[in-house]
Length: 98
Length: 198
Image 1 (cartoon, rainbow over the protein chains, first blue to last red):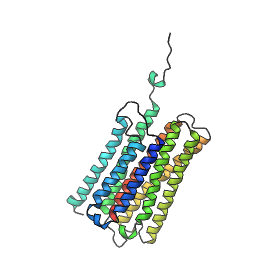
Image 2 (cartoon, each protein chain N blue to C red; image 1 turned 30 degrees about the vertical axis):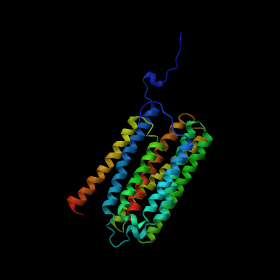
Image 3 (spheres, chains in turn blue, red; image 1 turned 180 degrees about the horizontal axis):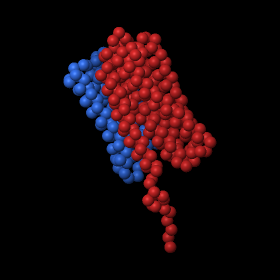
Image 4 (tube, helix red, strand yellow; image 1 turned 90 degrees about the vertical axis):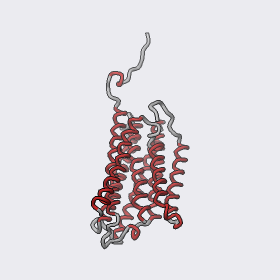
């Protein structure tokens, strides 16, 4: 990422990105129906979901090409949210035991 | 003697377009925490179903997958609207904006149908902590989609009436950021709330 001028993707790129997102969504749904993948389905789904998240934020929201200030403002929330997840789940799971 | 064109920023005036984008990105960062709280609450209560149905009893993954696909494709139409606005192709921009709004409304209709089905199966907002956390989370997301649809339709019609001649591109970009954010929240909800619970 840089603050220098940049070239945004073209409509053709956007259609290609949408196709990739559609394929990942199809793969997400498919793996939930494959019983042989039961043991790894959760990490697989999380990785595929994270990939979709990054692609949308990076290319559709143009964060890949934007100023670092915008990226940092958004990252504060993106990083703080899982920390909140962890803290609450730890509190309920370990400290309260429910 | 040479002349140069000075911008308002050269006179010390703030760059309002930049300020609006900063404000939107800060807002979206705070929204991450808002939805993070709701998703965390759902994860804490997801197994507390009481006498009511559980996730696997009521969730219809193929149906929700189609809804997710529709919302995902609305991000494509939104980014194409933004691209058209950058090129000052206002007619094309309005077409893509209205297409995005239409896809958003289809998603909302699907959510209403899904909620109705869940209520028919005995899952309401008061049935169990699972039901409460599920309806609050997905309901707030639906409310965000509805607000996005209103903004899209309003922008398209204001553009028709010529009231957005200045800064039109920036308006579409700001709304686009909001819309894509609603989409990425659903990407997380679809995985964490639906796929991982069945």
